[in-house]
Image 1 (cartoon, rainbow, N blue to C red):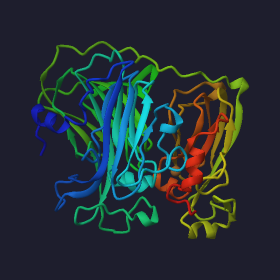
Image 2: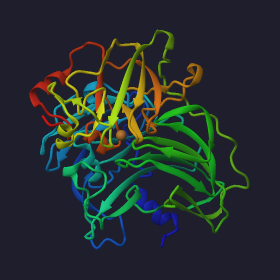
Image 3: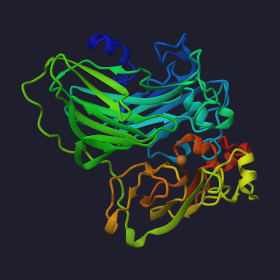
Length: 481
Ligand SMILES: [Cu+2]
């Protein structure tokens, strides 16, 4: 089954868990690299008759990603060798709006054979990832995602720092991607298609370890629509950060629930005995990662870790907040109702469904012509989110991290994506201090493709995206114009 030696796993992990550190990277320095998207192949299942044709970054699906130190300026030339236009969205990074990678909103799509240079400062340390932001459901399901790890200038003491990018694949009998992208649905039409969860493209990922070693595990839910409930055996530790933002008070790790696109940083000590295997597994019993234990690293575990150094994020002033309500509808028949589409027409439920639109945000199905909210730069914003649907959604705001506002105005730790149950209401708050046009959408990508997307405008400056929008008229799948 597994090959429980560190040598073997290291070979396979070289580009993922231990992605090469860029030599030129240091705070205040500039790292200049390229990333190429192209068709390639991958093996996600030992039982598939042949390799799967995928789209990957730098020849791999998921891509190897990169690690870089906080404070570095990244200049990353994206070369598109795919047969379709693409972009890169750097998920969770608070960067300049023109670098956010949303086709039609912050930049024109990059055509096949052309390139676009992303240039941004990595101001926050943490666990992030990147993926296209055009036909996102299809492009991500075909393999385009990769980890983006920003290291603290003084990282915590660990024996290994591993990023675990979790993806889900539907494969047909020939081992090929089985999704029916014309329907924008999560499940394929082929009833014989099989479901595969991988970590860094492997199932399971194997990492040889020793008792009392301390591991930093950076979990990234890179699936297109799965909520992952993850727990461990033979590992004991703490949740250190959510969506790249350190917790002021780390909490004991028992199990973590991740919406699509969410990340969790764990620090765990290996408690399993030599000869045993520690595991990270889903609530369904699926083993995501196996940690065969050989020997003992030290007689006792390390002391309880202190919190990771915080990223600098402005604290919202709730007394002077600008308030808005965002209502989501759709899903089951009857819950959708009438909605506007781009261009301003109002359609009946049947007309919307006929166009492949079945979810709305703020009365719109698909990307609205105008922002759902325009706020001044530096204003505190409170959004009351009403999930008037029966299904859960993972709502992602670009360019900012936000707090959920708890009872009595308590600020829940920062996130960039939040999981809402069906029928739930919640309030989020943040300081809108990053000017530009920022998407706010569901990261269950079938929902997004079928209409669940919107955007806010911070500040009043006219940016490159206005030009891009008028020139290209190009939007995400699900937009009918
Ligand atoms: Cu959703």
